[in-house]
Image (cartoon, rainbow, N blue to C red; front, side, top):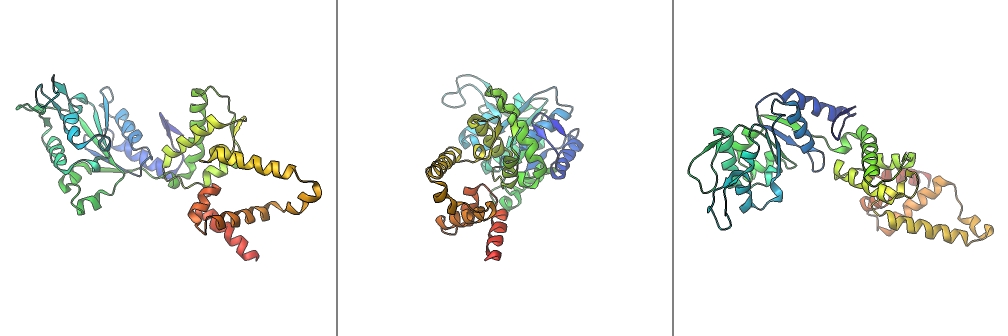
Length: 325
């Protein structure tokens, strides 16, 4: 099923997160969205906003990690003319820009602990004061925060205010990693294929079965963002009507060159010379894995990455090889 813009949901884990998002959308409570980088926390926040009574107003997003600490406060609260050097006119901050709507604070754990105290005060008192002003301005917004960090640990380490954590964590939604929602990998890949085929004016008919299996075998540490980037790159590189495995590999151009070199080497051989090199495909696969492992000096994780398979698949194939010896 497709739940909304760029939201592909087939897996029970992700459907559960979406179901909770629907349940809390109409509430006025603050929401904390957790999950690894690249899982789509902002998309969930937008989904909540579009289902809420605030949907006719703005959705304002800010990545707290992307702005230096000394600029973040003025970005959020705004400032009065003359508040500091360069403040040549009054400027509203994001709290005011989000009036009536939703303010999404991504990577809030990266926020300076001093500024965290001011955010807490805004959430408690529902008013803000621009830098350089003495009077407060009332605000009517909903705050949704997100982080990829473990806030419980950050609180224990005194890197995040406990009182702000409790204020934000009224409702918590965890967005599962892509490796925990494997049912969504192929539908997502197909969605991105369509998107980037249009953008690049290419007529691609689909993804080969071998490439499907390759996608399912990956661990995707960068989650949906990594999958999207990989598909976009594959669309650009694809030379045929379907996305193939070598198009998806992060070292696609290098692999294509290696493949061509191997083919050229074999074509130069006579049938008699090539015959000893021809082995059953399964045995050839096992030998190639052993070869890759040897040149990586036994480093299994790097070998799996080079071969485009996950570690479990590598261990399984190594087990087959060793049991046959």
